[in-house]
Image 1 (cartoon, rainbow, N blue to C red):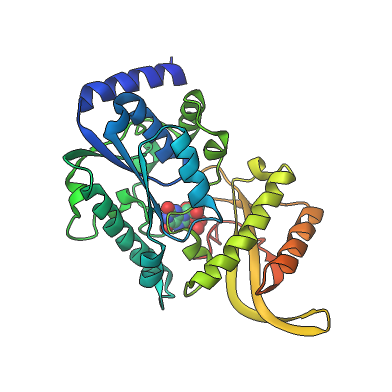
Image 2: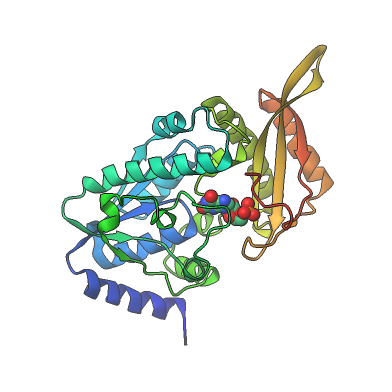
Amino acid sequence: DWTPDSFIETTIAALKEKLGDDKVVLGLSGGVDSSVAAVLLHHAIGANLHCIFVDNGLLRKDEYEQVLDSYKHMGLNIKGIDAKARFYDALAGLSDPEKKRKAIGRVFIEVFDDAAHEVQDVKWLGQGTIYPDIIESVSVKGPSATIKSHHNVGGLPDFMKLKVVEPLNTLFKDEVRRVGKALGIDPNILGRHPFPGPGLAIRILGDVTPQKVAILQEADAIYINNLRSYGVYDKVWQAGAIFLPVQSVGVMGDERTYENVICLRAVESLDGMTADWCHLPYDLLAKISNEIINNVKGINRVVYDISSKPPATIEWE
Ligand code: XMP
């Protein structure tokens, strides 16, 4: 019978056998899959696993520091790379969603390739691919910023010539979570909502600037913290704030304001393929709206998305 403990035991033994003294490079995303894959590999080969965590400037507020910290606490051999400027430069002036995704994917590969080159004699690329990733090999909206969806980007970067090791490729998501729990991984990492590879760039409609990212990060943090303190975070499949580049009129004291709109999105889903909007309590929505408008400069209006998928998608881009 399948149990997390038996899976862990046989997988670590098999990884030891397969990898011997070889080095593996692995990109961590802060998500469940790459984290569980990294911890399994770490148990098997220790410091020969070289993890890379890229700050693309499109993560949630404080997420880079927090995630890097918790990975270090787990004892992983991890290198954090601040590549914010490279991503912002590549995104400057782009407003088409697919062009934005492509630019992010391209820069990610460049940054990852540079980092992988610094690992002497590396032989393997570790990935957190799970079973459903293999069966639905086509991504919903085109290429993501994950490594695996970029096999067709033209000339392969050097790191992609590595042999691939994917310890989770027979598991479903709930099994990955159970394995992660048995490995003692931080429940905050295991219980995370899905977050797209291109990050906040596809939650800022149109062109992305560091200023818009900063505004969205503040609003999103207020939203997510309130979902947690109200006790509904774990009941929601995915939630996030969206920055709308439209301005509307408001009043603040005696002043007329003319500022941007934040949209709140929360959905229930099993796998992201279909989704229903969540009926969040009105008092919670009211509290979030007040906090955002009173504390986030540049926002004077908050709206709630009541569209389900299909025909709407979860992300707005
Ligand atoms: P949609 O918006 O298509 O999203 O309903 C379904 C799920 O996929 C995530 N998503 C992405 N994930 N790269 C990713 O890694 C992407 O480009 C991308 N686009 C959408 C989305 O967050 C949701 O969980």
